[in-house]
Length: 445
Image (tube, rainbow, N blue to C red; front, side, top):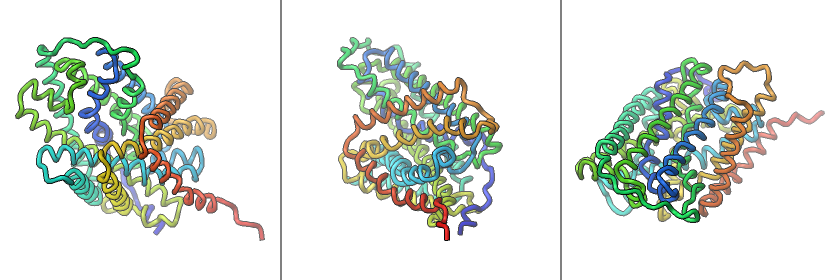
C-alpha cells in the first residue's frame, strides 16, 4: 500500500491554473462580507484604504517567503514538507493533524456555511437550509475532486472567472455611479477606532494565498513557476481588493459602508436596482463555490505527505494515478468537514464558530513556517535556490512578526471555539509520539 501512495504524479497544472486556484481560494467570500466591519473600525476613508494596503503588503511578504520555500522544495505536502525538513518530522505530523482536523477542514466548513447563507437568499428551504446547502456543497465538490484534478481545475477556472466578473461588476457600478455618494462622516474618536481589529479582518479577507504551495508538485517546471504563481496571484489580489474598496467608497461612502449588511448587493441596488442585486447574489454563490472547491482541492494533499512518514496512514494517503488525486484523503477530509458543519449548525453562527475554531491554530503554524525558511537557510547553505526572498533576513522576520500579531489577536478576539480547536490539536500528540518512536534507533542487543 505504501507503494500505491507513491504512484506516479504528473505535472498537470500551468501557471495560469495555479493563479486561478490561488485567486479562487482567496477571492470569493471575504470581500463581500468584511468591508462594512472594517469601515466600522477605522476613523477615516484614508485609514480604510490604508489597512487594505497594509494587508496587501503583509500578504506580499508572506508570498515572497513561500515562493522561496516552494521553489526550493516543491512537494505535494506543501507546508508539511517545509516543517519536516526544517523542524523535524514530529512537528510536521502535528501540523498534518492540525490541517486535517482544524485548519483546512474548518476552513472548508466555514466557506460551506457562506455558500448556504447566500443560497438561502436565492432559494430558501427551511430553518436548517444553510447547513443542508453547506453539506450538499461539500459532498458535491468532494466528488468532483475525486473524479480528477483535471475536472476540478476546469470547474475552478470557470467559477473563478464568474467570481472576477462579479467583482468587476461591483467595481464598475461603484465608479460609474459614484457621483451620488453621501458626504464623508466625521472621523471616529481614537478610542472608538480599532485599527488592530480592522487588520485582523483584512488579513482574514486575504487569507488562503498560501494554499498554492500544495500544487507545487503538480505544476509544470515548479522550481521556476511556483514563485510566479505566488507573486502574480498576490498582485492580482491586491489590485482587485483596492479597486473594489475604492469603488465601495465612491458610491456608498464610509458611513454607508458602516451601515451595510450586504455591501455588494447594496451597492448594486443603489447603482442599478433590485434586479442587478439579485443577479449579484447568484454570482456570490458562485464565488463561494470557487473558494470551496479550491480549498478542497489543495486540502487533501497533506494526507499524501503524512502517509510517507506514518505507514499506518498509507491507505489514507494513497494517490490515485487515474484521477491524479489523493482519493482517500479527499473522502476523509470531506467526512471531517461534514462533522464540523453539524457542529457549526448547533451554534448561533456557523461561519463565526469555524473562524474561532481555526484562527489560533492557523497562525501558530504559519509562524513556524516563517521560522522554517530561516532554519533551512542555515541547515542547507549550499542548496540552489531558484528564488531567493529579497532583503533576507528582514523579510521572513517581518512575516514572523505579522504571524505573532495575528496569533495574539486571534486569541483575544475569538471565543470558546478557539479553545476547542486547541484541544483538538492536543489530541494529535499521540501521532507525534508514534513518529518519535519510529525515528528512535533500535536498542542494542
